Image 1 (cartoon, rainbow, N blue to C red):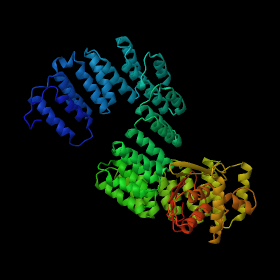
Image 2: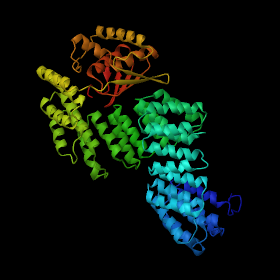
Image 3: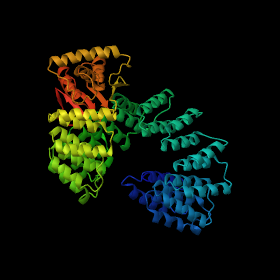
Image 4: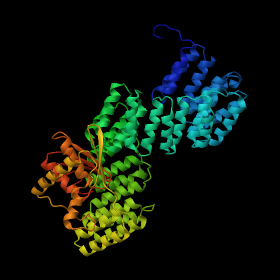
Length: 622
């Protein structure tokens, strides 16, 4: 416009400045903002109320409160009688996440004798909600009632939303019930409030009563199921959203991808990616990060790397997601290389990044590198180690057979060791056959969690490995007397976009007869190839033959048999298991991958297992 000789006026600058306020994360935005401000002065428009308010909004949104306030104070009579400039200052601070400052400027506005408008109340109520400032919110509620602006639907919605964001659902409900007119915002605010408190069923009752729903309300409900770990229901309601012909946005898709990641639903995740492309949904950094996480947790690290390479903008969460993905999928050295690339990109690692890189060291067997990185956390990067980081170090030392050093490290921990710490040490003792330290770890683990069935299983395996059969029998007697029950194993597998769930001995699947028939054929093939069932982890008091039957019907074996029946020859089989894989299933699936020439990816409670050509990526340590 300028290049063509056009002369800007009071209508030109507000949209320019508002665009700059929205682009506060862009590195060049401050310099461009200063240049636009210079043109405002050049064309003599700095005292125009709308231009001045847009300038104030821009500076406040980018965190330059001194300049924003100076511009307001430069206005005749300090902005007195001009609520539009004050509103811009308050709104800009809220956009810049300076919520307390936004509220403080509201107080200054009232003290200056400027009468708040409905826009003022809406902005400050939003700041109170996001900042969980319920006391100021209640005072504002009183001011709103006394001001006479009610009934005003937007102000009433802001009040409901403020109480809901602060977790005061009784007050939010009373306001909602008393509203003469409600819109989708009213309903969604209440639904989101219940979701934040984990009361997703109450939210669903309200959601089903809504006269009409938009993208925001559907997304709130999907996110509610994700937050409460009800991932299958999240995908089900997303499908309902498609049938309702409501378009999803990037926020919806992040929740959907998160559900796919947790369920290992790669096909649905791939479909979600196609959906985003087809409907032009913005592939921003947050969506990219969710895609990397989804592919990583579905065991498809190659596709996760593909997304990472395609991303034009990356943040520390992007780098952390790919480091963690590489680490848990058994690509330890590549994950460490990615960590150093992250540092060269001037992204500061956080505590989650270090969980990833220490896990990578564990999987790559890099003990010295892991020690060095652990020590550098505080000294070099200012990240205080948590119990999770100590768990990684214990795992690293235990995997390398340095059990005494692992025990000494536990003794030096600044926090009390939890079940995960003692369980990790016990698992290492089981692998290396160290009964002395193993018994100590089991003792501490059972003090913290007396009903922990995994502690008994690992200790029993340790005794069996050391040929201490009398101790094995004694331990099993204790289990029977205490009535300790192993958590039921459950395996999820996705086939043609549908999730199938199997539990041990399950016969509820519609293809149950075919699955068990296929499994019998598979077991015959395995036995012909030299497979011998490993019954050391079976605790029920039955005959040896019956113990073998218990093993044959484990959930992951049923899932594999179903996959062999239902999928194309040579395709990858992907399973998500809720527990640690047992020794027998691990041995069986290794052999299946060789005999049937299939890659089988199992994500259990502790890690990924990529079975190929009769070998596992975990190198038989898990």
